[in-house]
Amino acid sequence: MIISKCIKRKTLVLLLPFLLFINACDKEDYTIPVEFRLDLSIKNEPILGGSITIDEIVLGLKTIDIRGYREQGDDVFLTRNFDQGKNFILSPASTNISEKFDIPQGTYNPISFSLVFNPDTDEEGLIDDILDWLADAEEDDDFEGLQEDLGDIIENYLEDTSPCILVTGKYTYNSTTKNIVIVVNDPQTFQVLGNNRNGGAEVTLDKNVVNIGTLQINPSYWFSVITPAMLNGAFIGVIDDKEYIFLSKYVNSQIYAAVFNRMEESTTLTINE
Image (cartoon, rainbow, N blue to C red; front, side):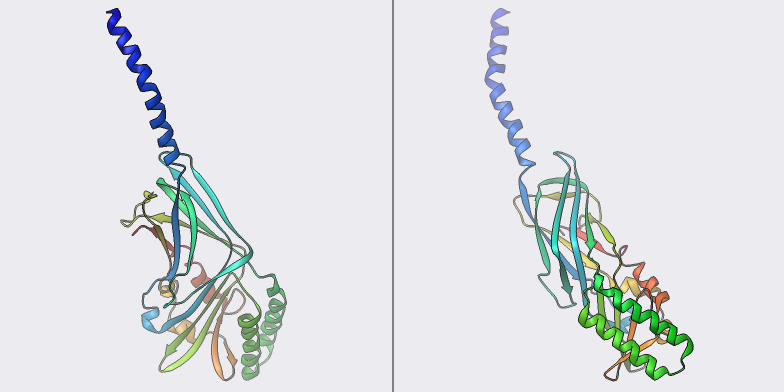
């Protein structure tokens, strides 16, 4: 009996360093960063039955914040700061619009990416111009002059500002094509939950592979509540004889609100498809 106890003690003494080593390795594994690439793109779906096409979507970001809750290991909170702001320019044909991160490996449930936008304070002068234009539009019946004045405002947005979100595209109806410009410039954050390929919230990041998150913007969903009649009834701006439908919180605001309210909810993130 005494011999048996001695053997057990010796065995425990011999195993203890090994168990401590294994535990240390497990702990270290969950602190090892993996290579994670966040790819940004536009979802390729027909917009308003194919009558709208997108030229560019520019996202002006201040930070990207990551929150991840792991089944093993500490939870993860990371922030990528863009001190001067950073514009991500997306087009239907664009590739390699991405940002790379080092994120601890492990199984997350959930993990979310928050896009914190960077408003352009230079817009203030243009807002004054818009308010003056709106006042004129209520009193003046010189539609041609009003269209040209709005065209000047649109041109200033396109050339002199970097709003949070700037969308440019085209709308074709009855063989007539008009340009579309959408401007969003309020402080805001889009929080996007990461999903696995099956749509679930449990995501595994593995140090042995390049982990890829595909973040997609979905203009087809934005315009799914818009009708051609709404766009055909919008205020028009004219630049160099070309017509522009301008959507902002001040001009064509009802259409703008319907589109903007669907932006965040339709943005998706699929990890390791």
